[in-house]
Amino acid sequence: MNPVRNQNNPVRKQDISNGVNYVIIGNSASGIASVEAIREYDRKGKITVISNEAQFNYSRPLISYLLGKKVPMERMPFQARDFYKDNKIDLILNKEATKLDLERKYVILADGGKIPFDKLLIATGGRPIVPEIKGMNLNGVFTFTNLDDAQRIERHIKANRVKRAVVLGGGLIGLKATEALIELKIKIAIVELADRILSATFDRKASRIIETALEKIDCRVIANNTIVEIKGRNNQVEEVILKDKKRIPAELVIIAIGVSPNVELAKNSSIKMNKGVLADNFMRTNILDVYAAGDCSEARDCLLGKNRPIAIWPAAKRQGKIAGFNMAGMKREYQGSFAMNSVELCGIPTISLGQTLSEGKDCRILEHFDKNKAIYKKIVLKKGMIIGIIFVNDIERAGIYAGLIKDKVDVSGFQENLLKEDFGFISLPKGYRKHLVTGEVSTL
Image (cartoon, rainbow, N blue to C red; front, top):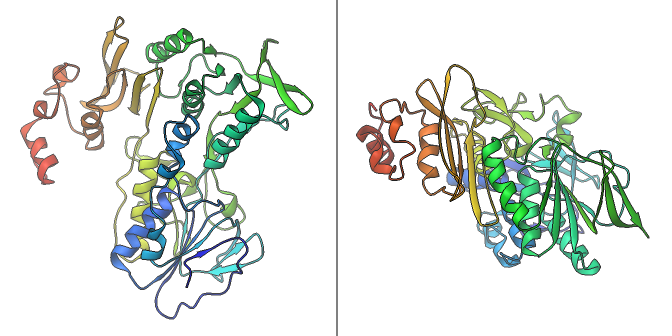
C-alpha cells in the first residue's frame, strides 16, 4: 500500500484489527518525534499522520535561510521520504482536520472524511497573529511562519523586483524575516510597538547592539510605533502609514508580531484549553487517549513551575517524544522546558535562555560588556541558580549555561568564574562533570 495519500485520494475507515490505531495531527517536529517514539516500542500499530500542508516535512527554523538563499530546498526536510515507508505511516497531506468526535473516536476532515483512532496526538503547531490593519488584503502583504510563506514571498520579490520592505514586529520572527531580506539586498524598516527589538527576551544593552549594527547597513528600526494602514495602487502595496502619521514606501510588508497556539480543532470540544491545549507531564489532555504536544500545547515550564506555551523547536521535539512513548504504553514524564531563542543579524550571533528580564531583591545580575567588540553577556541568578542568560557576539559556550539552567545547579561556589573568558566544562564542579559524562546523579 502506498503510505502517502494526496488530496485526491479518498479517506476510508482503517482496519485496526492488528493493533493500536494511532492518529497524529501535525507533520512537524512534535508529530514526527511522536512517531519515532511509538515505533521504538510498537512496530505493529497503525500510524496515520494528517497534515494540512503539501510538503512531506521541512524544518521551520530554516525558512529564513531558504528565503535568504543560504539553504537550498533539498536541505529543508529533516526526515527523508523513506521515513514514512520505513515506519509504515499512512501520511495524509494537504488535508485539514476540522473536527473531533471524541465519543466515537474520529478525526473529521474538511472534505467530510473520517479517520478513526485509539490514541490521538494533537500537534497542530502555531498560527501567526494577524492584526486588523486597513489594506491587509493588498498583494505584497505576508506572514512568515511556514514554507508556503517563504515561497510566496520569494515569488513576490521576483515578480515585483522588490527593493524596499517593512517588517512589522521586532521579535524573533520579525528578525528572522529581516535576516533573510538583508541577504537579498532589500532595504528594510522594522516597525516595533515596544521601545526596542527583541523586547521579550533582550534588555536595552543587548537590543542596542543589534540595532546599531542594523543602522550601519541602512536598516531602520522604528520603535514605539505601529502600522495603522497599508496603501497601494492597482492592488499592489506601495507604502505603510504609521501611528505617528509617517509614511514608509515599500513593495513588501511582512507581518511578524508573533504566533499563538493553533487550537481551532480543539475549540469546540471538551478538551481543556487556556491559550493552548493543556497537557500534563505525560503530555495527556483531560480526555482519555488524547495527547497534545508542540506549539499548540501548554506544557511545563521548568523554571516558572507552571504550564505555558513555549513555541520552540527543541521543546516541540521533546514533547512529541514523550507523547509518543506514553501513547505506546511506555510511561515517560516530561521534565519541562524553558524559553530559548537564537538569531544572527549582521554577522552578530545572539542567544537568550530562560528568564532574562527577571529583577528584584532575590535576583543577582552578572554582566560583561565590551563596547569596542560589541560583546555583551548577562547572567541572571536567583537563589544561587542561573535562571536566564543573554549572550551577544560570543555564544560559544551557551550550551554549558543551558545545562546549568536545566539541571538547576547551585553555582554559588563558582559564580565568580561564570563570566571569565576561559569558563568551560573544566570550570564546573567535579560531581556535575561526572553527571554530564556518565548520567550518574552526584552530590554537586
